[in-house]
Length: 302
Image (cartoon, rainbow, N blue to C red; front, side, top):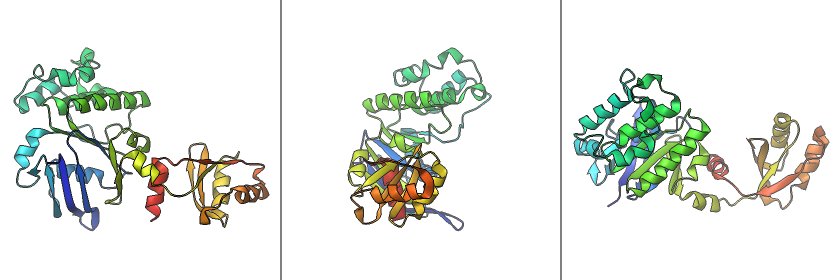
């Protein structure tokens, strides 16, 4: 039995199709990522899997339980951390955690080992109201509350959005430890670099899953030669490179441009000459290995 089984899920809000026939499976104990930009359908998918809304078509099972028929049972075995901070802002850190433990008929003491590494970082502020916490502290409290009843499956909807880089790194370190406890974790994120931290990922756009594989597996399937170039006026360089007749795709990545050429050209010399003629001076291109974002952009064009 899989931890999560999804078959042909569809969900529409008036005229907007949020989910378009999504199907995938997640193994028990897996750290599975749903990777895509805002508006891709990630939150709608999570709300269906956590029994908060019904799909229009298709079916979904969590630990073998149907999300419609068995919604009460599912709510006892999952933890859910929504994208927007949704704890009681007027309650203290400790009061929030105690409340959620009580709802699930357990105590903080009983499952403290699960949240110890997380909670000890905010325990010095346990009497502070949740609404007064920093973004990173709110994130740790929300995760503690989602874990306090020892769920079998943990759903984290964009947990690191708006959080500083240090807290993001700490958070993923926590997830790796939780995975060792045998908890299945399904996490959504718009950050492509976080995809590399998952066992497997699903790349989603406009309600459709484009590809499912391990991060390395998806990168290995990238079958175009990819080049990186830099110049002094990157904005003008981007515009000019896109006008070059041999350019297949060109996107800005940090301080450089990632480029594929039509017909799998063996050399970027023609583009370098074109850029020089456009007044960019001598630029140098180098062939590079694709990353997850390169793969996502290529799949988007199909």
